[in-house]
Every structure is written in C-alpha cells, then in structure tokens.
Amino acid sequence: MKARSTKATASTRPRQRLGRLLSPLVALLLWLPSAPGQAGEMLTWLLRDLPPLTIFEGEQKGRGVVDLLMPQLIASLPEYRHELMRVNRARGIQMLREPSFTCDPALIWSKERAQWVAFSITSFRVLSNGLAIRRADREQLTQFIHEGQVDLGALLQSGKQLIGVVAERSYGQQLDQVLQQAPPDSIRAHYGNDALGSLLQMQRAGRLQLLLGYWPEIRYQAAQQGINSEELEFYPVAGTSKYQEVHIGCSDTPQGRQAITRINQALLQLREERLVELYAAWLEPGMRDEYRADARSYFQGLHDH
Image 1 (spheres, one colour):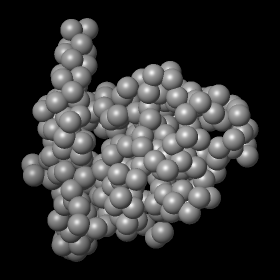
Image 2: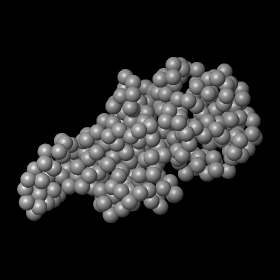
Image 3: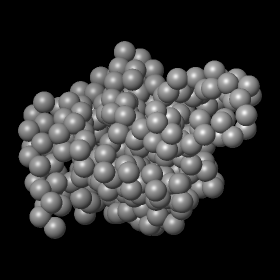
Image 4: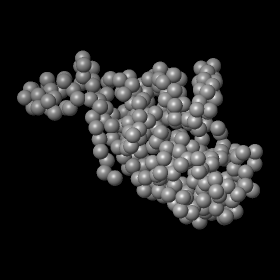
C-alpha cells in the first residue's frame, strides 16, 4: 500500500516562498522553534489501520480511539510541526528503526522493540489478545479450555489446530514467547494490508480453525467482512494478563527521546479520562463498567508509587 500523508498544520508553501524572498538570516529566524507562533521540527506520526484504535475506511473512518486522540495530542505539542502518515506494519517498523523523527501512537512494548524505540508511559490499556473460534467448531477447543481460558501452549504443541496470526505483530511478551516455541506448521501468518480480515475469511472457509487477536478488533473486522460476530466465541489465554499496556513509541534518537518527555506530560492530562472513555466505548456494554473500574485502579496505583 502506498503511504499517504496529511498535514496536521497549514501548508508550508507560503512560508517557503517567503523564505526565498527574504535574507537567509530572516528566513532562518522564521523557522526557529523559539520564534513566537512558529513550530519547529517535523514530527511524523505513523498510523496503521488498526481498528478500533485507528480506522481508515468504512462508516467509522476516523472515529477510532487513537484517531480521536491525535488532535488533542498534537495541540499539546505546539513546538513541533506534525505530519500524519498512513503506513502498513512493515513500513512503520522500518521507519521507527531508521534515524528519523517518527512516532507510533499505538505500540505494545517488547524487549526487542525497546532496543530501538523510545517508549512513553502507558497511554491506556486494552483487553489482551485471545483466541477466536467459530461456535460451530467449539468442540475442537474443549480439551484445551480450563476455567474459561485456553492453554495455548498445549494447543500449539498438539499440532491439531491451525492458528492464524498477523505477521510481524507483537501480541505481548507472554504470547510472543509461546508463539516462538510453537511448531512452525501450527501457525499461519498473514502479511497482507487487510491481514485480519483475510484470516477471518480463511476461518469462515475452514482453512484455519483459530484466530489470535484482540476481541474488539476481531468483532469490528468480522462486521466489515459480513460475518456476524455472534457466530464467533472468544477465549482469553491462560497465563496472560487481563490487559495489555499501549504506549506511544518514537524513534530512539535525540529528537525522539525529547518528544517522549513532552508526550508523557501530555498523556498525564489525557489518559485517565479521555482515553479510558474512548476505549470503553468500543467494548461490549456489559464490559464497560468493569474496564473503567480496572483502569481507575491501575492509574491510581501508578499515582501511589
């Protein structure tokens, strides 16, 4: 997919034309971050199609959690110019690894990524990944379910089921380790731009039985594929945390690390009220109050420390 970008600020063309007419010194002063009313370096935000966080197409386009966060986050960082760039997963990871000034507003922390990404404090938490299966295929999973949770390690080692995953996605430290130890022929990794939608269609056609992912994302993508989410069941994975922390990650450069310091200040103002409610709206109604209570408890615990 060819990356498309939109400017978060007014076009720089008039400013560039003015710079050519004025003396080099005056033109330079116009661009200095300290000049009144002027923004400084260009910060490129990398946005991936990741419902319900970012949504590129359909009726909910631009209404995802991160979509609605970005205007407020950008307003909190007036010292930068801002560019929103749509990228696929591979391109986004590549740009973060380069010596650039780029940030991804929705990253899961991993030990590997921490070697080349500067991470923010937790921005919000999402329900952890789990396994989705068609109700009609439930019996294939029964022997691996204990107290409502799936023993993913035993399931993968059994070699009886084929599990679909999105290639190059981190499912969190715990699940990533389980997947790394699994027999290669037990996992079907999809690299396409619409990877999850394609995996859902494969599951519907019987070409794979199980799908690993976030339940709100699976429900959203199922609707886009014309699949009734009532046909699916979702099970948490045994041994994993109930929630995963989402962070903002910037390229590990002097500019990126400095931006993270400012982003952390902004998140302290945005996360507990704004972000909690934005994510809660995407949960099934019966889960929202529990999520809100858990979020309050989590953030209060951070304050206490």
